[in-house]
Amino acid sequence: MTRVESFERRHWSKQSRIEAGKRPSEEQVRDFREIYLQYAAEESVMLEAQRCLECKEPSCETVCPLGNRIRDWLRLASEGKFLEAAAVSRETSNMPEVCGRVCPQDRLCGEGVEFHWLTAPVTFIGDEDGKVRAIECVQMVLGEPDKDGRRKPVEVKGSNYLIEADLVIMAFGFDASPVEGEDASKLKTNKWGNYEVDRVKMTSWPGVFAGGDIVRGADLVVTAIKDGREAAKGIDEYLRHLSKQGHAGADVLAAERGQM
Image: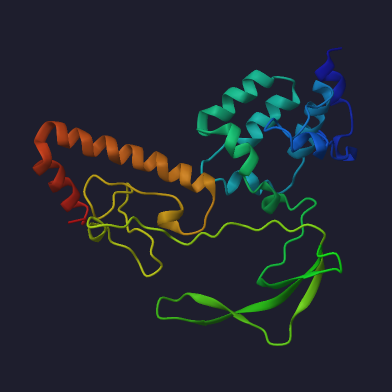
């Protein structure tokens, strides 16, 4: 009996999550090496992959903007075919090493994560030594729709509450920061300061393309990668027109898209 066949005889539903473990924090602060440790044995990877395959609602795959075949490479990994699994992953993911770390899969399966939706932080509360001990938050509700149909969060008076904490990680802002200078007027923006683009991510300035947060607002790295793919096709199309018909032909292409 092969190793894989012996695994298949087990009751997968009884398997608990297998953690790879992390390097000690005192080691992490000294370098930029990988934080997570490798699994002690290939069997652990196979077991963990099979545990994920048992998910009855695999939303990780259905909502992936890149269309990653997550269950396909999990199935290969569960069979010990790790190189084949990596090859399948690279077919759709341009940056698997990055996406694997930043993909918000915790929002999709929610395992071990607690989200406080429609909640805004108010202030941090410290102890006598100046160390954080809690976060004061306030609950929000969606207000009435504006003229564009967007419902902005509105504070619920008297709904403040505390969340105990000994460590707080501040997230970076996602406000748009368009380029400045005399050419900035060539780039149309919406009321939030994001660039307006056509179907292949070309801006109102012919030959200039944009995607990701500067177009969408705060979003995911995978949607930025998706935008990059679409922009690459648009750039290729634009440059082909440019090489065959010159700037006039390329400008006609832009005009056909309603960008001029």
